[in-house]
Image 1 (cartoon, rainbow, N blue to C red):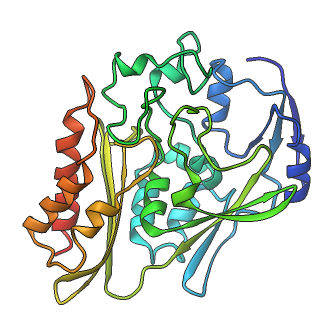
Image 2: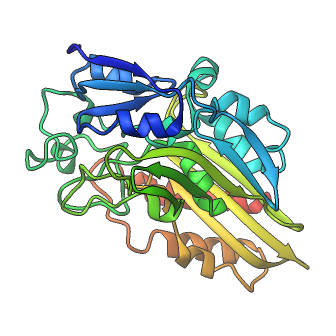
Length: 322
């Protein structure tokens, strides 16, 4: 690992000021960042420690739960205010391992980098790591890669279970920058790769995530998170589904669906949602939603199975809500 400087910020404004230089990064749990630095995938001149900031609180008011950016995943999952949002708890507990959830922060989880092995191998070309160097995943081993949202420059998937649940819930990311505060809907927070896969989020350099606002689903709403993976724990999703559905008399009044493992960002599908709304939640409507979801899928040599697998996962999730 290359040498770097370290600074412990006492408040959010100080953290933003310290992170002004272009090669500075925030760190809280450090469960992803430090591994990337050890492997030479990322190099930074300065780490700004956020752990002394008062940003770990979880509170509920006015129909939403606000989760501080430095709150640990396991603490959030166990917080009484969060138990009113089952899909969020399920997604949090599906992530990583108990040891990592005890250390990893909410903000860090949202910003974790892709598990694409070409990105994580500093000896390999990667447009996300070194723009213009190429993407071996396009014609290489791409079992874990995206079938939706990719480009000729990148097909890496976003790894966060939490981000998928927050997308289905319509959450908002609150930030602080030298220019002031911002509220960014999660649906706009993650960027598709296009020709600039090195730009993954709407954050500006030195912009700090301070909290996340999560709307609490109303009466009659059912939700679930399903993660399919190669082993039972400490593994990333091959395919995941987060569903938030409101029913009345067996008919879908509102549906919010998001998916992990198939897209270059947490993938919301308005087309699949429209196939459900106003219709009874039957096997036929569920199948129609699945077909709408994958209509524009671009499967590759090793990941074509995801097109069928995600439809089966969606059917399982919605079938349990009838």
